Length: 249
Length: 91
Image (cartoon, rainbow over all chains, first blue to last red; front, side, top):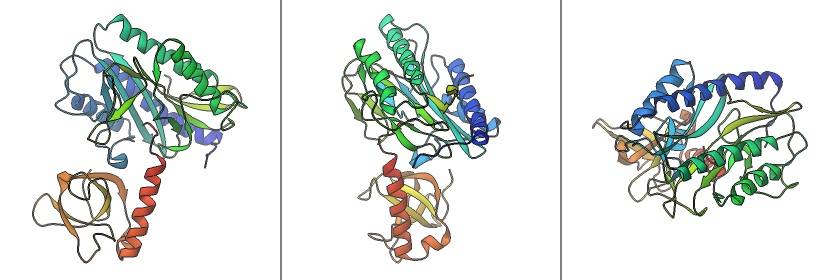
């Protein structure tokens, strides 16, 4: 069931999205070579709690961290660990959510630690731009297929693989609401977009093939060819005035 | 998150690995809890498990749902099917 939010509900949700966006910005600034993913997770948890919110991911279906922190060839759902040390030249994808007033915000970004290769930078830039290509299609009267098609065609034209096994989702009172928002699709097909819908659009783009594998911990997803992957995400509200990026500061 | 009576957990090790269970009592021995699922592990025959072999979720079942095997089974099935719906959706 797709839940359409009222103006009042959107205002409440904006607060959760703002805290999520601030936490992501803080995480990006705190990143430095030598720190572990568990240390970064702890900083994120403390930040979200200091704002009076709760980390949405913590214990969600048994996930042990406040944020998913995935390095290099890890696509998504990296579990923060004291053994995973961030090094110079790494790509670090941070995905987090904050819940306050009964609503949740969800956002993600891939950060570069120090100097990265031109190929890695191109991957990050393309993934970020593909997210905005998708957001541009999130207008009243459009279809979910328009968003997916915009993302997939933008990335595939540039030679990248679009992960198909995992999708974006509706977000609001819970982290995962209907509809599923795939990063591929046919224009003009899929659920019709209506004012009040709030969706998380999140392209997961691989440098090589789109093939992925889930690791033995049951969470972490990696590329099968070991090549880099990037992930960007925004929570977007569909309004009569166009898409409203709720997790943009 | 602290384990408490009624907490829904996912088993990380053992023959029940991957399945959802409910904490029905905390053992006196530190770090162990008794878990049930109302079917393979009914309330009359709980399984003692090391807490480090369990992934705790945010869900805590109310006492009435853990009062009888059929209630427990129904509540866990509802939880598992809600979790299934989120499969394939990224965080």
